[in-house]
Length: 448
Image (cartoon, rainbow, N blue to C red; front, top):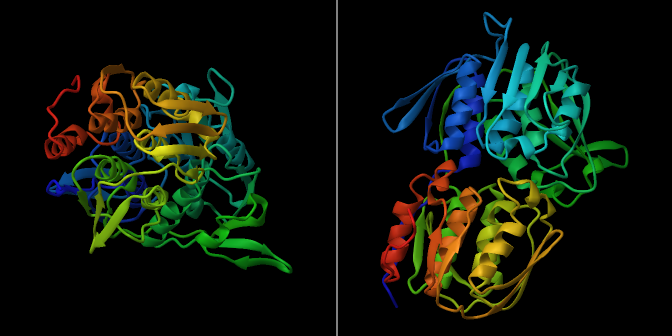
């Protein structure tokens, strides 16, 4: 067997956003270690500076002097916030800014003006925020005018994204009174990400009560205990409280580690990834369960996990809780024998690109038997792929670029139209991927 390829996981993008926001809303000075350096985080930091926070590098760490959530000295004009192509920045900041009196224009680039925010703005209207869409109803650009949040009861629909709730939660401690958030709709997209928000808030001194419907009212509930409840049986209660500054280290990113975990299973060499939290609240930790379900061999040693080359078999996988790794799993399933059915992911059509149709179109070009379904896709693997050269489209989507690279491990020469789009979440991806290539005896041949 080829020698082990050693990789350190990049920092969690989701936790980096949340840690930055909590530190920027706190009184006093915080030191954050391991905040991901990427385009999306740059956008969030720019928005937080516009709210009065000081954010600057200090060696390998980030120094943050928070604004305490106070109104800006001159809040007379509209503050224009460009969130770029970062859906996380857009949805979290659209909630956060309304806690601070003023008028804010949230706009972006790329597909951002086709990504809905209506379910969040509907909740903000209940809090007394004035919402004005400039172009398409329910989509950015949007101007949010707030006199600060009053608190009280608010309902929110999470069928498209749990980020709407996270934006609301991050703002709620700065409201004048307690906020009771009731969930509505049939399902909750990406519920594990809510745990990341709750954990981050608690680290910065703001506890949130999660409750489930009981016979005589409401009873405390764990995040895991709420995972399979109907949304109407869940509520969250946030009391007014100041964010407290402090030190925090951001753990490794399971989403961005997924490509290397998959590479260990489908390549010729085992891959060992350090820096991952085995008990992480990140939903994409489910990648290991998927690997094991498909026949992958996985071993832990401290904070490092090793995935060994394995004969994978198809599986049925509900991916509602971890949509970001669907492109990875689809590419990995192309190496498996038998049928893999990915379901529960209808909201993928609203991402940076349509992440149902995108993988189906591009993997088909590489000779993969794959077809789209309304809430996912089916991949019919034969255990081998025809060796060829293929020109593949990333749709400007970082996760498409990274997942399609796995095809190289089948002996396919992959030429991507826009390999640079990985900078959105993982600027150093190609440097790390070079280790995978080298360990598998592959020459560098992506169209960088």
